[in-house]
Length: 271
Image 1 (tube, one colour):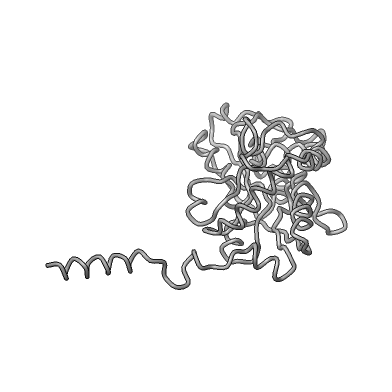
Image 2: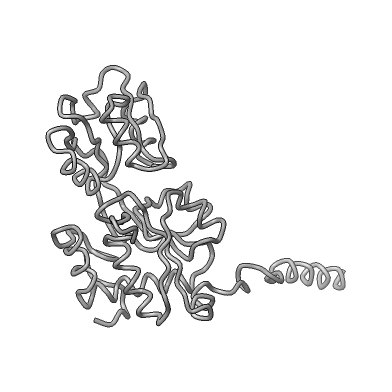
């Protein structure tokens, strides 16, 4: 009987020990980035002022500016890649992180990880001037559009069960469909909606916000060393004022939220 107990305990110990090639032994992206001398960051090509492609083809906005500071701290080159599908891109391993406007939903966190929330925005409908800007007043089926995998579509369907959602690869295409009368609204973040409304003044307007949207940087799962580095860097940039400086430069006003907690930064972050 004693031998049987020992054998059972031994089997249990083997079962609980980390397997070869497990996530615990996987090289952190932080180490890989330093070895290659390059940081590869995905940014949204059509979400101004958070991130977009300038007239010269170079990415511009808050996210590209923030990525530059992270690369400078790492002492490596920066490669900015336009990305429209954040989660699939991370799963393929093409990108080290996505500095986008992705909402950390439960479904997404089953396949990727997120940093602390680094931006807050409101989800709104961008509509034509003759349309209602309140989705809750839509009594009849309404056709709206947004980009693929945008969580705003689920929010809209919850508010307007008989509504119809059309998906586009980029917001520019969705906005053009709206202007052509093919849809009643485009669901997107307020920051970007304001940019489009200003671009097509007298034609489009920003509707009423129907969701407060937390946004975080997307990274691969189970790489706590890389996630911690980004979390601490975000807080350090907040503490030294560079985060707010970049934010005001791109958005036109200082951030009206807090990094990590409204009560302060994470203990141990050097101010």
